[in-house]
Image (cartoon, rainbow, N blue to C red; front, side):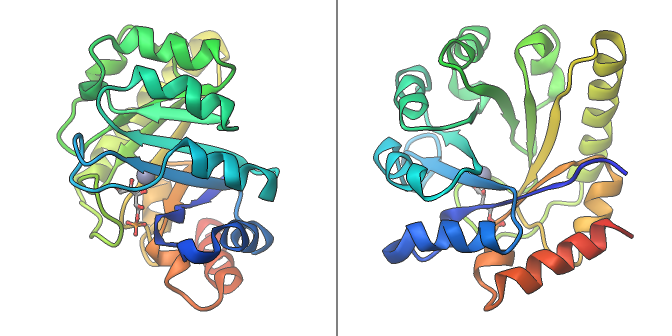
Length: 224
Ligand code: DX5
Ligand code: ZN
């Protein structure tokens, strides 16, 4: 069995007590904190920036996975690296120079990744696999929590899994395959079978009363 990682998106957390909300999902068995950055320009919503990342950094040893939904991309990368991000991903359409942005993330000591909207082709990966540590497939259009999983993403996951496995076989390099949007207890097994190893879930975890029960239920599905 592959290693599966559960990454609650704090977008659906109670922002009035964000530190506790971070600690509570990790105590409940989550692996990674998914941090959604929206700029009201690349996506029609506005969320949180490096200051908030810095504020939650002391609350946990877990990896902080910063998902940038911003345009332009480069200026904010060093700020998130300094704020304690471990992984930084961005949408290739939002960067004028995708290779440069990936390099910038790595220069700042973070793992780097590309995010693919539902209609964005995986061909952006063709010449940059050596700089990519994570591939994030959006299974909703970015901008809001609580949307419905787009089923066509399953085929795309299979295609991304093929690319990763071929690259890993050739180079030995590990690349994580993350899925983001509409992930629930009742579809996580199917999503895992299509090739994802890292699962973002916002509303499915934070909108339930017992985070541990929900995360346990997800793990039970993944073990099937
Ligand atoms: C959407 C964000 C997601 C979102 C997921 O633009 O990137 O991370 O919070 O929320 P759910 O799990 O509720 O679909
Ligand atoms: Zn996200």
